Image (cartoon, rainbow over all chains, first blue to last red; front, side):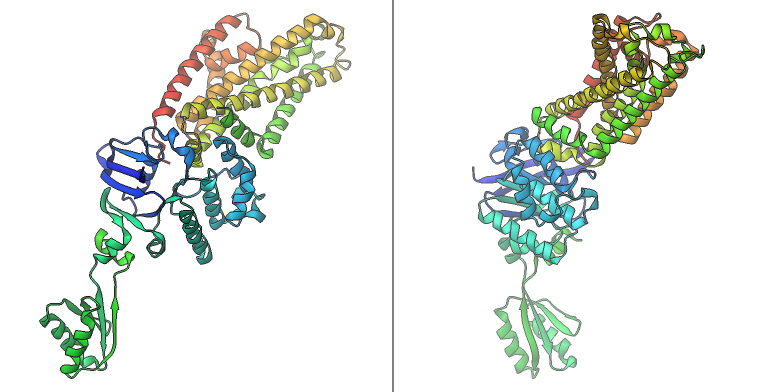
Length: 299
Length: 263
């Protein structure tokens, strides 16, 4: 078994509407895989099928080497938080976790450790309905960690968290991955995913747009040079120089944006100098995951 | 299944649910039993549907359990509400997905939930019995009821049989609530439908067209607790109740097993 998750042609149709269409991707074992896509692109449907909550209309899939048609074979080794945390409002955080611990046959003693791990040790005895959104999210993560999972499936784990909470979740995911846990995480915080996800699955309208290494996706995007002349009258001259040498260029907010690798920066600087233009700034930028996402999904 | 049962019992024993249900049951039992005894010498109706239960009747062995079984219908309605809300809230709170991730066997979830609620029903009936017998014993001298016959082996045997019958009635109403909970997937819809049907529609139907009593589920459930009536036998009520519940439960269990959990 080399994949934590592997799906082939996975499809879910509701009446006339296709929620997921022939999705094929793999999540390598022991890695963090980001799962991205606009709202309604089929992320949660996919996650629900992986967790045995809904039945696929077509296609096949395995989780930890077992068919998704037999979730009872792999779910004891899987932790999950789907579509935000959901608990009993009248029970305390600790009681809620104990309910799930009893259900899964896990020792109740684990509850205190997990509350400590997610920073809820001092509020474990408070009723869930008194929790803030961030605290509810932390409790959801604690519940997902109950089985000491080999695979962790998290749907928007940073929703409602403040910046330090987001950082804590990021570090937690990193720590789990370093211990060998595979993590499949959907998030709209693409900058966060860029920092932690070794691989990515990108969906749009139920179809897989990209599935592979994050590095490969970003490397495939064209780099941009941003040049700022000393005098703004030279902006259009710089655009002409770039276009004459076969590069797309445009003026944006007092700077010239040129689609070119960083290596061409020196040549461009020399060409500008020869044309009598002095550059006050020249920087090379690579497309971020967010920019790539917007470009690929057309959002 | 037993893991599910243990988990469900954790939810059922939360003070807001447990204490309030116990208080309601104890209060209703005390109220109904008190009415029977305090009005026993009035010559007016003090029993179910305006029956006159005189001190002479209460002084018999059956007097021990009269207060106990008179509350069975309301005990059943309480169980209906608890079973329905405990089942349907998993959908409205979104917690069903958590349960199914930790226990993918949907039949085990259903069986464990049901068992835990049966235990809850046993607790309710036990409280009903204790309160009813205590109030009956306490008010017997005031109502000029002699209690000698209550401590005979016949009375104790009747107590055992009534306990089982009231429990069966409570479980039957509870099962009806669970069926509605699984069908409607909303506590409010399930409880309101169950209560309106059992408490209002059935009572009106049975009052207007007495022959319908034989076929109405709630009337038959309650008839079990009473040990049968002159018009509908105990055996008939047991049979028709079991038939309704088995068919209803099988349908909703199949729906529960096959339906996508999309909320």
